[in-house]
Length: 519
Image 1 (cartoon, rainbow, N blue to C red):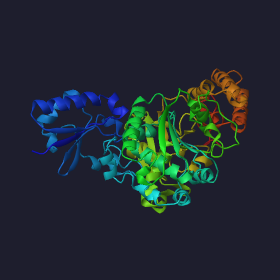
Image 2: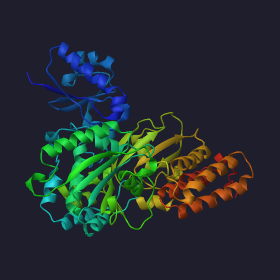
Image 3: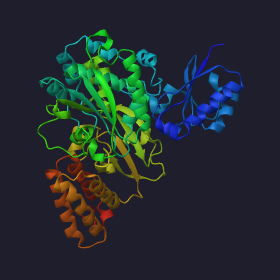
Image 4: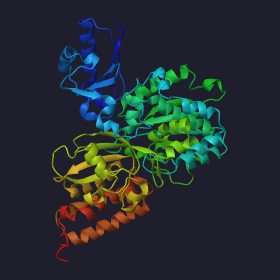
């Protein structure tokens, strides 16, 4: 009798929903029934309302059941779920679930499909094909592939990745570094965590290719302290990759070397800013550095350093494996490829959606998200983390692309999408943005350190109707100072949510809304 394979996710979201208990119950039930069963702990598919999502490998493909609780397990066995039997929790073939089927999964193609720490699984699904090709290319040729792909930084700044790579390659130094910014601290974001927990070899491969391209021989992954499962998975994957020759002093017997280590952050939001991250990596307090010099020229320990976020580096293996043109053919305008977008907040079907740039927010909210979880009308959507603008319904049909969002004062950022229904008070949310900045500011520059504190006070006066009109003028002046005078994006972007709330939802601040019909 052949062994049946059952998949239960080991992703943090699935664990929080009870995946370990479900896996234990399945193993126990199989033993009691004398059934030979291989239990694989895969990554999450990103459909969090269905977690724990249990899948069974059948001759016709993988069949999904979810959300499964420990109490459901005996009934699943009784219904013959190991052969794809019918059950109220049956979802049919996993790949045919509409939420998944309508996506363009390039970076997340293996997510939820493979065992995250199985080299055999990884290589069976195109893993290390990009690295093998990179080993046959000159550094300049690797950089050119990244340039030609149109890949831009997925951490929020959207700077062309290839230009950074080219700068580091062209800077002479005895030692260069690759630093992965995995300090994913934006509200409603989890694609970095899912990558590190669900497909760590992809990040390792991307960083190794970056090392070959720039001449760097040492890499560091800076992970936020709140991600213990990601840290453990990365460390395990690094050990496995080293033992198999994919990392170390002689990568795949090429004579080229690259080493990798994980470093845990200290819980500072501003350490998501690349220069503050470098300070923290050096064992100092995470304070923003003035630029120039750019980190690509003088970064970690004063050496040329390439800093990219998780999704940027994780996108590289596919680009090398299939060629720049393949990746570039997805997307619109100057926004090429795909972006893993993360639906969160007051949304019925929260989860990860990887789509080519050009999809609209309305499509994401309703075709994927199913509308609000409360069933009430959606009022505002914050895109791009806690420093992103609040977008009203009039802007939900814009194509999701960096330039289109910048034109309306918005930001795509890291792809985090947080939904609010019509009970939300945008003046409170604007106040929260200012207070968040005050709490998380590194304190180095005055516009951010003092401006955010004064901003909270001014918003409180507006809400209390203390000389409201004058206070609104003052708030706008204060925001202008923060945008143009702050040392980094922490203070420079805090006005985005504040001004968007003020502009699009003035009634929440007690301001009189002009009657356009009367005009």
